[in-house]
Length: 70
Image (cartoon, rainbow, N blue to C red; front, side):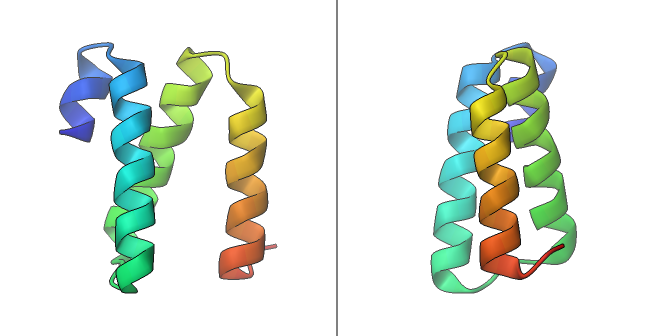
């Protein structure tokens, strides 16, 4: 669903689905590294296309705080 939205230029839909996936998967504590990485990359790519730098910064802060990434 995310990949289809990104490839078809529906960046708002892709960003929304990425956000929903991340919130759901993280709340369950069941996140596979490959899927997590794909969703984060797709999320950021969509936000770049939407010219939403503040949200990209928010993802960066969230990753650092939640997952202890430096």
